[in-house]
Image 1 (cartoon, rainbow, N blue to C red):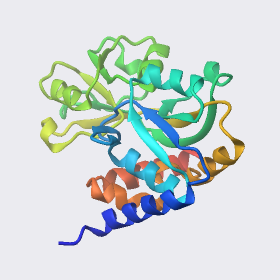
Image 2: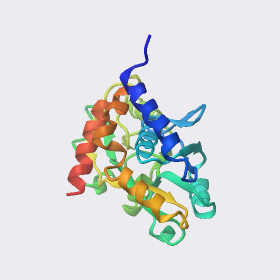
Image 3: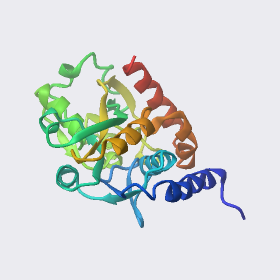
Image 4: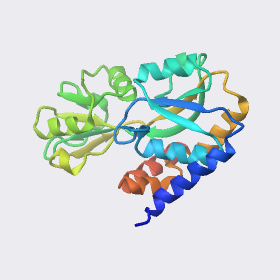
Amino acid sequence: MSPPPAFRRLAAALAGAACLAQAQPLLTVVADAHPPYLTPARDGLGGPYADAFRYLTAKAGLEVALKGVPAKRAYFLAAAEKNTCALDVNFDQGKAETVSYVAAISPVVLQAYVARGNAAPFKNLRDMQGMTLGTVDIAEARDLLSSAQLSYIPIAKPALGFKMLAAKRLEVFVSDTPPAPEDGPPPRKALALTPAERWLICHPDTPPAILAKLRQALRAGLFAKETAFIWDKYRLHGLFLETQAVWERSRQ
């Protein structure tokens, strides 16, 4: 049985990169796991972010090796080791002097959910005061809720947050990913929060020619139209279309 078209297209791009990238140094790209976008895999990292990044950079003639590391170490490695980049990091103005922010790769679309039958949709974050609030444990969500002086419970896995919401252990759950059918009864969207962006950062001494290729490859991020077949492979086409539309509106 021949492999599906999506696998053949990705394999062809990666094979072409081996020839095109011979004159370029290998880039080590590190990232923390961020399901369902980035997941641990035998070859380092899997998931639609990893596959889309490999596909786009291979088309640009770059050879990359993706490795999983904790988020804090990803920043350190990108700042300290040549030919090293970190994928899927939040923008931090204080770190802009120690790393090169190369390209925004994706939006972070945060959504507040409540169990069906609960409170009316919120008008703003202040409406959540005094409620039992959980959030996916990412910097963008923590910073947003802390700036609004809201107490919250950080939850590592979105699936657990949705199950806690369904079990009424939470009144509100803030997530950057939608619920899956196995997460319990479908919750209701109560408030869309201001989107942020996730970035690719690299060592400050990365050659300008490589930075230029990365910026060109990632000009539309990991939700570029040409990556739709990758998202289809992971059965995330609806999420791809929704996120792409939100990002396009936010950049107008």
